[in-house]
Each structure stands twice: as structure tokens, then as C-alpha cells.
Image 1: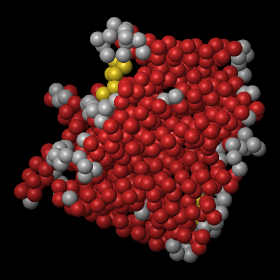
Image 2: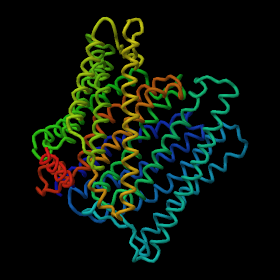
Image 3: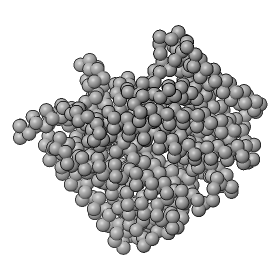
Image 4: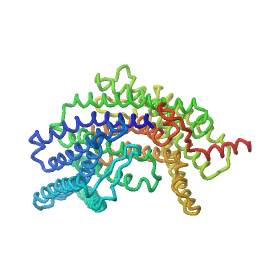
Length: 566
């Protein structure tokens, strides 16, 4: 476990050190610059940002504690209590920001001091919450060894503090959800009645930023409170939850501010446009440099280690991972292109065509992996040759797709200055290639969705009929990994194809889409593999104790039975 603790601690410290200065810089701008300071929405966001930054000591000291193996002078536990208080205050600020958006967009007339009073209440509640946890009558305990935190029920006030915080967050989430639902309906109604074009929505970037933040907060709250009930208690789940927390509160908010607020007031953006190109290029290069070696290490293990190599599911995941890694040249060359302001010798455009082909092949591999899960979990009897044939077809389709795009008859064009890419309809085959690729992805995603829906229903039925406990689902980690990957792929595809129709064309949307692509294909897959597959983690982190804890023992039995029958 030492290597896991050390790696986890290093990740927390590194990410905190990278994100916190950027966030503090943004808060400084909100407070210092008059055009932001005079608007109440920015004052609310600044206060919400302060609560986020006050969570940073917890991640920093937690990282240090995982290096040391114990909580030094209980600073980790103290910072945990501070974070617990900040989470409650942050939920109130989120509700106040939603009210501010409702007041502005719907032209409501009520005094602004209501928002100010709610902000004061948020700070008072957080201070009281933290103060009570620091008394001997209540405690919030941190356990470094098990990656867990819990309220100490032996203290008389712990249960009351826990329930008060839970009810507050639940109430704020429900009220915020109602406010944003009302706003969405109002905007759609207003656009329909007044025939407003997409430019109208460009004035609502703060609303969009707040809505995205609320969606991520709500998802994280559900994961924290109900994740163990769905997946069963596990160290992997606790590690993943902690990582999601630091990404949600220290990485996502400044990213959204940088991307969206410049569009809200494009005449005076947060920084000069050249700096946006440089920062975007640097982000692509750094993310690729960090994620690609880890992903290649995962692929090497899948190929080199016999227990992975002999299972077809790992064959499919390896091929799917190769398509992901083949997208890396695009992110590297585009990052360089944004630094120099030009697509040098067209290498960015060539790598864009390669990425487009890989995206189509990746969708087919995702469908094949879903079929493999269906065959294994539902005990279906058909030859594995079908999966192999589909994999061969995927590679052939990708190669043909890329080859046609490289001919003079079709083209997929990259524009560095506008952060955009598009099919060149002046070439005779471009529209056909575009439609074929679109239909392939659509068909694969539809079939994959049907398969996973069937699998979820089957597993729930089987658990109900056979009274299986949560340990049964621990045998289905590959299914969970594939399901999560499919969900993110589907969301990203919808965002890419319909984002501009909903939000209007903007530079911020194109930048955000590119960042989401690199996170979805180079960051998320290796993260899921390492977090979910414990035996793979043993190989990735050689300092760990070499214990064979493979979770696919039923798979070995099924595969051996199939091989004996053949």
C-alpha cells in the first residue's frame, strides 16, 4: 500500500499547487477590477471561490499525511473539519448565485440585500459548523490508512452536526435545482416567443457557468453519499471520490471562469487573446505529456502480462486504448500550432484526420467491448470469432476513413486562429465521408446503449432474485469501467455535435470541447483502469505488495470452459 499512498499524496499536492495560484489570481481580479467588483454576481462568485480555496489546506495536508503514513499533529483532521464547513457554505453560495441569475434574467424586482443576508448567513453557518466540530462534544475523524473520514458517533453532538449539514446541503441543492429548472424553461420560452437567435445566449455565460458548477456539485454529492451503496465500500471508490473533489473545487471553477467570463464581456476579456492561445497550447501539451506515458504503460501491461493477454476483454480494451493514444499527436501538434500561431507544414491537419479516424474506430471497439460484457455476464454462447471479426473491421474502417481524407477528393480542415475544424464541402467526397462517420458512430452508440441498458436491468434482476450483496458487483469492474467510458463518450459526442446549436458559436465552447476531448481519451481511461482494477495497480506501482487480487476469477472459469468445449 505504500506506493498507492505515496502516489495518491503526490497527486493531491501537485494538483493543489498547480490549481490554487490560478484560482487566487482570478479571485484577485474579481476583487480588484471595478467592472467585476461592482456587480453582485461577481461578489457572490468571489465568496464562493474563497470557500473553494479554503478547502486547499485539506488536500495539501492530506497529501503530506499520505506520504508520512499518519496525520501529523492532527492538521489533516483539522483541515478536514474546515473543508466540511466550507462545503456547507459553498452550497448556500451556489443557491444565492442561482437566485441572482433568476433575478437578472427574469427581471424580478426585490431588494439585493436579500442576497447579501444569505451570504452573511452562509459565512455564519460555516463558522459555527467548524467551531462546533472543534469542541470536545463533536468530531469529524480522518483515517489515513483506509482513505476514509467519518463523524465520531461517540461524541454527543456529532450526529446532530452531521444531520444539520446534510439537511442544509440537500435543501440548497433542491432549491438550486428548482431555480435552474425554472430558468431553463423561461429561456426556452422567451427564445421561442421572441424569436431570439443564439447571440442572446451569449449574455448568459455566468448562468451557464453556475449551471455547470451545480451539475458537477450535485453529481459529486450523490457519489459521496450513495457511491458505497451502489458499488460497495472500497478503497478505490474513496480515492476516486477524493480526486473528484479536488478537481471539482480547485480545477473546474477557474477553468470555467477563464473559458466563459471572457465571452460574457468579450470587449474586455480576462487576458489578451494571444495569452489564450498560449495557455490553451500549453494545456494541451502538458496534459498529453502527463497522460500519454501512463496510458502506454497500461497498454504494455495488458500486452505483456499473461493473465491479461489471454482474456479477450483485455484484447479489446488494448485495441481501444491504442486508438486513444493515436489521438495524442493531434493534441501535441495543435498545442504547438497555438504557440507559433500556424499549422506548421499541415501536421496538425494531418493529425486531425488521424484523430477523426480513431474516433470512428474507437466507437466500434466500444460496441465490441459491450458485446463481450453481454456474452460473459449473461452466459451467451456464440464464438469469439465474431468479436475478432468486428475488431478487424474497426481497424479496416479507420484506415479507409483516414486514407480517403488524405486524398484530394476529401478534406478535414483545421483552423488554428478560430479553434475550429470542419469538413471542406468544396471537395466532392467530404460530405459522404462526414455522413458515413456520423452514421457509424450513431449506430455504434445506439447499439452500445441498448446493450448496457439490458445489462443493468439483468444485473438488478439477478441481484434481486438471488439476493446477491454488493460483493457480487465487485466482480463486474470491467463492466463498470466500460459503462462509465461509454457515458462520457456519449456526452462528449452530444456536446460536440449540438453544443453550438444550444449555446451558440463561441471560442470558449471550442476550447472547452478540445479540453474535454483530451481529458476523455487520454486522462479518464488510464485513471479508470488504475483506480478500478486493483491487480493492474499492483503492476503500475511496483512498490506495492504483490498480491494476486484479480477480480475476474469468474472470467477465467468461463474462458476455460469455453476453451474445453472447443
